[in-house]
Image (tube, rainbow, N blue to C red; front, side, top):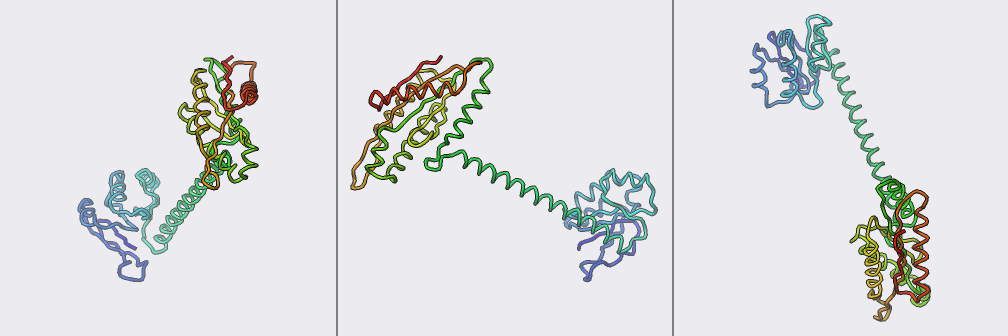
Length: 315
């Protein structure tokens, strides 16, 4: 343990270690600046400062010693000739964590060091606890993120979509009037594709379509989700009806040109039908009204043979 005593008079210091390196070093000086200069290359675990160094003004002396000579977990102990409450108040105000009244004894020193060690241990324990809490929060956030995603496609799932759409609806229920749009999409003749090529190729088809939907939706700031099976949904905020129709047509065209490789080197094209609807948010209507309208348009697209877009203007 590296220790130092700073004072005008040399003081008999108890040995608290077993080797010469652990004995107290005594510095006799009337000039504090000289003391700091002579030892500035060293950091100490314990600094004892006699009262004659600071007199009645410890505000400048003690902080300087702490900043320039004390290590991170070190202890600075001012030494008083006698305990006087006014002096003690001055020391605490100057940043002292503890003080010592003459005579200096091994027991007093070890007690002060023990208190500081306990404080350091407690600080470490608190820091470790805070880290555990932060790690737990991060893990919870990751779990929540995973819970929001569809396991097969990696895009958002139906539960998250409903939660997101509901929250957006509540946010925009008051003026200024805002509009939300929903595009519902369904892969055409997917059951036949699945029966012909198997579930593995069916899953691959769903993943490829989901990937294209997400890419297209992102261009207009939209959110894409898998609604269930081979069905998908996209939500857009405050977009003109024309933009909604353009996005739906882009998705239809992209999927039509998507060629999924089948065993034997064959490529199988798939198509998709889409229904789009928009609704101005106001008192008296619900986001379910928007979903139902988009679903009706999707049904129309399917009934006309699929591979097409049906839209409804905002109401």
